[in-house]
Image (tube, rainbow, N blue to C red; front, side, top):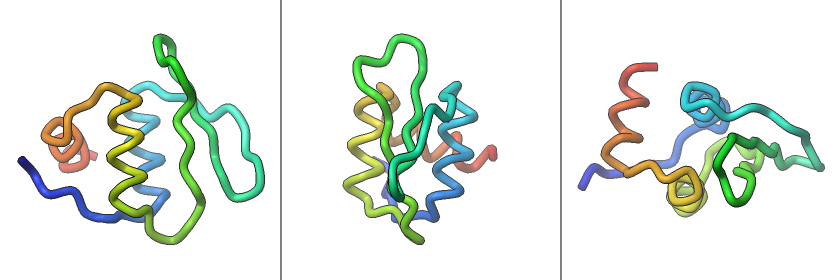
Length: 76
């Protein structure tokens, strides 16, 4: 299994936009994204570094495997 490390929130935002999510709104320092077919929105905090558990939880919501996530990050 590929190792997921913490990354900057802007990099994760680029990933979200690449996989088809759209920015919906912002409440405080949390940015909320949505995509057709998701049961719940993807929420990321605007911290400097996103913790691994936030990335893993959002990948689970998106239905993307960690391996696919790492491959997509290498492309963008």
